[in-house]
Image 1 (cartoon, rainbow, N blue to C red):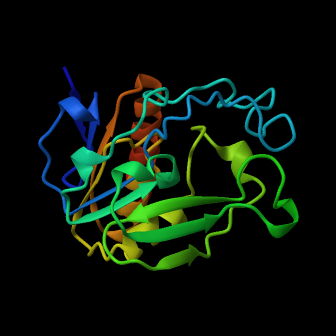
Image 2 (tube, rainbow, N blue to C red; image 1 turned 135 degrees about the vertical axis):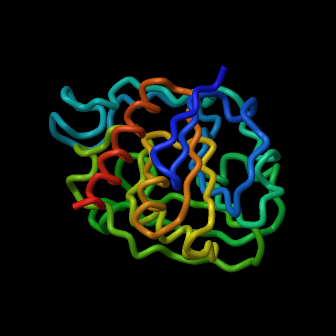
Length: 215
């Protein structure tokens, strides 16, 4: 059975399978789902704390559901939708807007793995580039192998025209970055995560973020 944790009136977290927890009422779906890569995070960046380094908490981790083809159909009926990694499942999507995050500094282009990540946004047909910089320290700070910067998720919501006070659903919330972005920008959040470890990480991160607002 899904476990529901409410961190106040604006943040609801669910530990469970998002395909078995609905239906949901939300104004937008903003998420970084499993891509269907079956990827094991064994090395990225350099140094003992870099992703895959000897002290990295993401070393050897896999993403739940990543071994299966991802079908976004359950989320496409929402009014506003942003799905990261859409180039892994384009056969399931209609024409839409493309969001681009260049996640490396120029001197690292063409090195290990991708230089950028792509998101599909429901509606439109333009291509938009995020100015979010991925700092060199970010790999060492990661607590989830596919973690995105908070500023990037804030940008996604702005591009999707999600108003303040609206409810954002992240059915694959991972370490809770979208939720932190919602807290910082005055939006409500519903987050679902099937992995118990990542769920606990997300809960702790959002509790800490909410506590900062009380001082």
